[in-house]
Length: 137
Image (cartoon, rainbow, N blue to C red; front, side, top):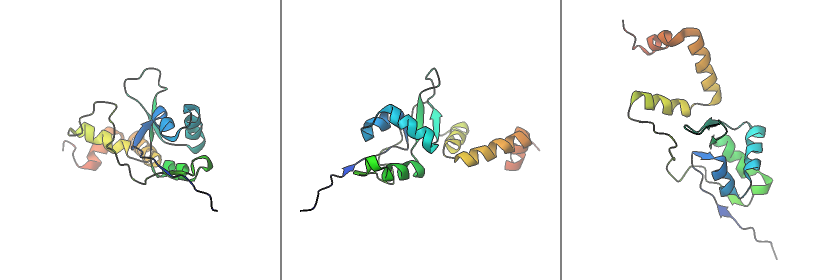
């Protein structure tokens, strides 16, 4: 007789705390933190949490690939797309220009963020605004 493999469907949000991901995968927070360090996953601080240790993990393609292929998690079925709306941890008005810029920055890859930082250091805000064509004449 063949063995039966139990498959568990996991729904991942676009951003999750270490606690949320650990509970979802039935592993410890320490395991998640080790994976973050080892795999170089992209994280961000949670606004309003003191100490700077509370982080949100960006559940992107590299995280999903790792979780799908990790030997300890092979019985899990990780969907390629998030099935739940993103959970907001801060109050950002996505209708305002600042909120839209914030959203764009949060969705940039680490390489894109680094290139933008280099550009801003070189050109400054005035150069950035002029390149966008929204400078004051």
